[in-house]
Image 1 (cartoon, rainbow, N blue to C red):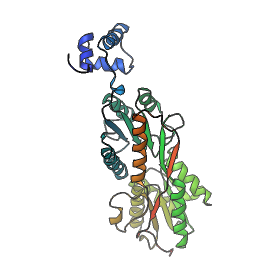
Image 2 (image 1 turned 90 degrees about the vertical axis):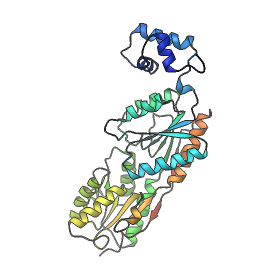
Image 3 (image 1 turned 45 degrees about the vertical axis):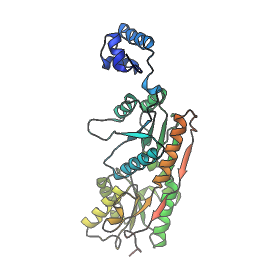
Image 4 (image 1 turned 30 degrees about the vertical axis):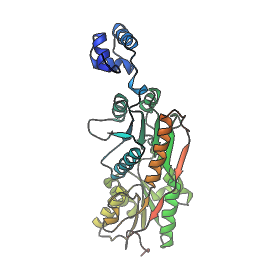
Length: 326
């Protein structure tokens, strides 16, 4: 047998399938003691090094939903920055019908990635972080973009939700709006919690907050509630929600921005070309990706990850969906 032993070599040596070898090495249940011992003995005799301890030069990128244009932008920028550093990437998408977050993270481990960058993978504060903990324990360092979890020994890179809300509200107030609403996703998500807290610190009450989901349909539902309660402007938790707000306004015979001003969040591709062009908060995606890649490469090279949160400043991009209060 030439070269570094592979999982197939272990399977042949132990007289089992490669799937069984994989389950043993990953600590999965349902394996007999005799089979487990045979696989581990084969690993010792062949001097097998688990892929998580080898260097492949590949960095995994985890996305919750590749159909969301803002996540796709992060994937594209991360890939470009990694290539500049001589690294390749593999993208796993937990949003496909046959996938889940745990399955996606297990796929990264099985692929033998050196490390992983997760986009919004630690934003659900009620989610079980066991899959991420297992990946890190297997020797795969992780960096998280737009998320935070105190039980994960990782670096967290976020855009300031505080500044996003403050700049949006300041802009709308300069146009004469006082009845400003917030259309946001579920409260269990970190960006929702931070945006809600920032909004309330500016003097708004719960009656001006509509929580639905971060989609076009969620934005449309939130808009109905906020328009019915007399709001003349709506700040949204995502560009998709903002498009839903515009849709609901038009369904009611209202004009944007003449009757209702709308602000999104992300500055997703094509938002400058919607009708009207969307005023939105732009995340500094390039800078955030460069910071993530820099941190993860240092971790791969042996440095201990600085488990702190880096917060980046967003920009308000003013276009045509906001105007003076009528």
